Length: 232
Ligand code: ATP
Ligand code: MG
Image 1 (tube, rainbow, N blue to C red):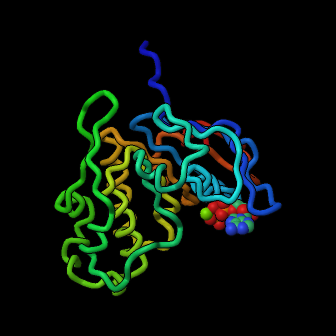
Image 2 (tube, rainbow, N blue to C red):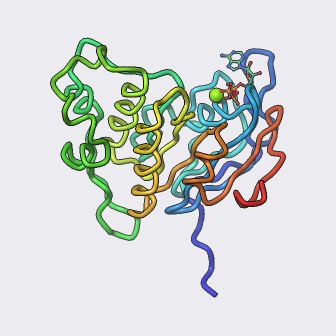
């Protein structure tokens, strides 16, 4: 039996605070290369805060965050993104006055190679349109004219343009029409098939089960379960 590859991302004893409110309590988790991991739990359980804390987007945190062998604790969010972490927050951030295509091109394109020397995913515009066919027909329209679900798809697509090794997705299926949910699921499986990893916050157990290898369940900011999707 081969030894498991070292994790791409590992959190050990992660704590986070908003002001005096202690939100995350010793969260530890791992995401391996080519793995899709779901972060589940009720409203307010700390899913979004975990993703934010990985990116350095909470006011105070402690504990260990390691990505591709590097400590992230002291890095600024833009540095974390540069290392190859792509983050799609809950609130959609698009440039409403710019076209869909201009929004996509604003996702900084950064050629990458995997640590073993293989070329990274290096998404091009046509490749992203293959993942999200709806976007191609809309590419010259202002992004502000899109539906909420389409805007969600655009933010994900724009993040892909930065060629992340690991994509952090906060509730990708929330408030999104079934056809787009379907494309989101396909996109996640395509990333996985090409060796990239995904950590997604998800309340929809059906969607999580469709795409994920494993899950962690958070309750009041602490990990209460970790294991296969089947046993959930
Ligand atoms: P949801 O499913 O509703 O998105 P979640 O699991 O993502 O929930 P978080 O958004 O991480 O939960 O919130 C965890 C806790 O932190 C909640 O009690 C929430 O009220 C609190 N919280 C979140 N953001 C802030 C903030 N900016 N300031 C203060 N408290 C916050
Ligand atoms: Mg959330």
